[in-house]
Every structure is written in C-alpha cells, then in structure tokens.
Amino acid sequence: MHRLLVATLPILFLSACATSQPSTQPAQSGAAVVQPASSQWLSDVRAISDAGENAQRRKAIAARLDALQLAWRKAPFEANGKVGENLIADVAGRADAPLLLIGAHSDRVAVGHGATDNASGSASVLALAERLQRQPLKHHRVAVAFWDLEEEGLLGSKAYVADGSTRPALYVNFDVFGWGDTLWMMAPGQTQTALVDSSRVATQALRLGFSPGEQYPPTDHLPFVRAGWPAVSYSLVGADEITQVLEAYAGKKPRTPAKVMRVIHTDQDVIGQIDATAAVRGVDAVERALREWDAKAGAGGPSTTMSENSR
Image: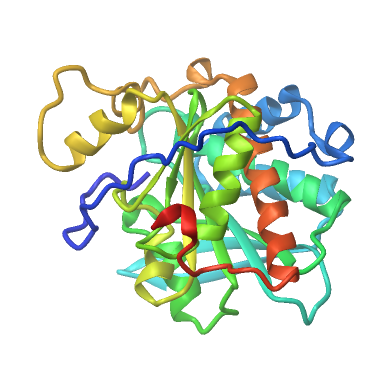
C-alpha cells in the first residue's frame, strides 16, 4: 500500500449502508467445491513473502499460476528511471466478452517481508483466479494482474493504463487483505453501486462488516480511476482501524494507531500477523459479490449507475 497521501484523493467517506433484513439469497451452488482451503491461501502468502526481493516474489506467483495451468505473460515497463515487470494472466471467458480485471501489487518495501503489504492481496487474487477458472463468470472474461513498483508510486498499474492496454469493464484491486472483520471497499462517487450492493449482500450473508466509500489510501485503483476507467479496491481490516487509517492519511495522529499502520512498511510485516481464516472469508464475500454483479450485468441491470439503496 502506497503511503503517500494523494492530494486529489476525495475526502467524502460513505459509511456502510445497513439494510433492515439479512440476505436470504442461497450461496453459490459450487461454493464448497471451488473454495480453496485457508491453508492454500496461507501457503501462497508464505511463498510470496518468503521469496525475497521483488523478482523472486514474481517467480513465486508465476509458479502458482503454472500450477493452476493459467497462461501468463510478462509486461516489462520503464518509468521514473526505474525498470519494472507486471505479470498478467488470462483466467477464463470468451475472448469477445467484457473484461473483468482483478489485480494486486506484488512488490514490497525493503523492510519486513511484505506479508500483509501485499502478499495477502496477491494471494487473494490467486484464490479468485482459481475459483473463477473452475467456475467461470457467464458474462465477463477474467484476467488477473500483479503490479510491480506500487511502492515507488503506483508505477506498474500506471504503465498498464498508459500503454494502451485493454480497458476493463471493471478493475478490482486488492491491497492489505490479511486480517479483520470488515471488508473496506473503495467505490468512487456514485459509480459501481451494483457491486457495492452485491458486496453488502455478500458480507451480510457471511456476517462480515462492510464499509464502502471514496476515502481510501492511494493504491493501484487510482491510475484506472484517473483515466476514467471503472475501478474499485478492497481491503480486509478491523472495523476500528478504518477511521484510524484515514486520520493518519489526513496527517492527524490517532490516539491509537491502527494495526495496519503499525505493521506495513516495518519489520513487523511478517506472516505471523496474518489471519488466513478471516482473509478467506473476505475472499468468499468478494467472489459472491462479483458473481452477482456479473449476473446483473447479463440481465441488463445497472453496473455503474446510482441505485435506489445509494440515494
């Protein structure tokens, strides 16, 4: 997670909109089959965070993509005098279908092991890749991306947008997804309300907290949003951490620093901080939300317009 506060980051924070009744929608029929065990997710976090420098972290991700028999490619780039390399993999879906792109940054800072920031996000993308490969979406093709040099200023995701790459119907980002009871979602303005609503239903069904809004730390969704491309981002944290994180990014000194701010970019960012059971519940929620979003799109429902629940 890129720590520098971006001045243009909107400051309006939309609190979670509670609904009066819990979801009665059944779970996806194949959910129990396609969910990887929390041990697999944790194994992916460990492989990435123990790998060493950024090039080795990418090799660990590539090895997992190979194990899933997913075709992947390197996308090298140069920016700000630095050389980086993104990894892109096609997951499933018709070539002419709208693109759902799911991504996370794979790089880390020099201290710690980058387990939370951001092996946890990369492992969550790998988990969704496995699930959506086994049970593809009906109306979107899916690809996954692992961005390099996010910690140097979002350079990998900026390169994807600047290089004339395929504009996705939606980009879904993961950054800091290692513990907690609340799915924190960056959803700009009144857009992506169909996915916000689907995420709310999914989190209610799984008894997770949900906090959507515009105010959110700068990470790889930003280059997409600034280009006018649809994008959201998810983190998994404790409910009490959100206000503390936002205060820190606003230049205030919270009375109690959030756990995430004590862990990332420090020597405390190690696998011992990770809660795999919580993280997989978060991945479950996002998977459910994306499947409902995909179904709504196929039925001609709204995908980016303001919904009644958001007015």
